[in-house]
Amino acid sequence: METPVIGTGSVGCAATMKKCFAVVVLLILVLCTVVYSEECIDTLTYAVFPYVPDVEYYCELIESRWAELEPNINLVRAEWDCYHDGEPEGIDVIMFDAVTRDTLLSAGWIQPIRPGSLQESEDFFPFALEGFTVGDDLYGIPVFLCGNFLIYDQGCEAVATAEHITDLTDASGILVVNSEDPVNRPQYVSEVIADETGEANPSADDGAEDMMRLIDRLAIDAHKHDNDTQVATAYDSGVGQGYIGFSESMRFLKRRSDVTRIKSISFSEQENTLRVYADAVAVTTGAKGQRYEKSLKLMNVMAEADILTALSVRDGVPQYLLLARRSPYQPLADQFEIYNQLECLASNEENHVIVPAVKDVGFGNSSADLLN
Image (cartoon, rainbow, N blue to C red; front, top):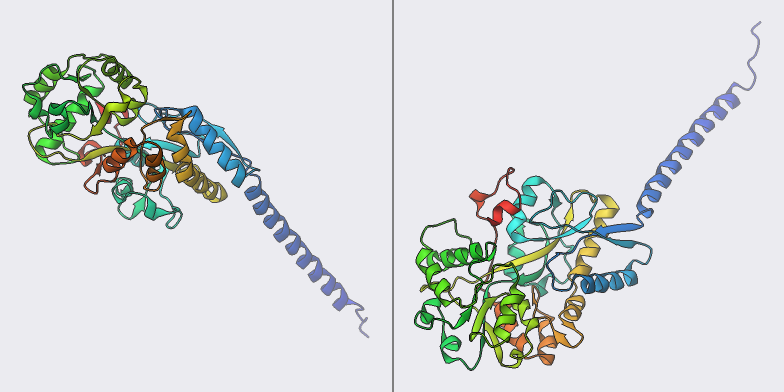
């Protein structure tokens, strides 16, 4: 007679239940780990463009707004210079000049923005977005623009009516230009070649010598430091009837600010090729998952219209910033008429963002190499 096996069904059922319980516990642990890893993002590190006129104030505005949106995630400031520094390791969001765009891409340091993550995209000038677009991918949110403009005394008829540098050929001593500066001079050469050829991002050319000789003759106070404030200060002290510089240098004008105007001018006898430098915020390749999502949110804050509007006025003084989006200009123009002129410069649909020529970009290039 066979011995009956008692309770084998119960034992098997119990074993099965134990296995199921173990699987459930394991799944719970995995889910908790995922949730915990997402929730444990308590800091984001960011670096603004170090050449913004007032870095401290800009950071204060960003961090104040961020605290309203994400009070549990602290922002940590970092220093990073797209022209001279290497990989932005440990930084989630960086700001860079479009002239270094392809170098950063080649090095694999920045990643594209997820489609639809750009807030109020219609408020940005289309050409500014195009400057950070490669193929179908957007590699940054544009924030600031700048360029070499003619800043002048509205009472000087010769400068006020000039459309080309050559219109001033016989007016030696009329401009303040830092044409001897080793950093700015290549910019002027590039402007000359661009206007001569009609190409926004021209390759090197030998045809700029005559025009540079003219610019040198017009320069009555050639500074040797990469500091537009010195040129602006010389003009403000009564030297010349105008100067060539970035718009934000106008914040140093005291005596002549009320009579000063700004416009673009051709650096040759050909038509002016409208071109501007542009700075954008980007997310680095180190930001993944939830950190990537929060980085996108921070980027939108750094480019927020209200923040840029506030940044454009400090202690009741305009900062003369060229912004890459439309909406801040009207409230600024309501306070300072000069912003009507700045809006005309920034919003011109013929503008091109200055980016490196394709042949000049490669894995072996440093950001600084592109500027030399």
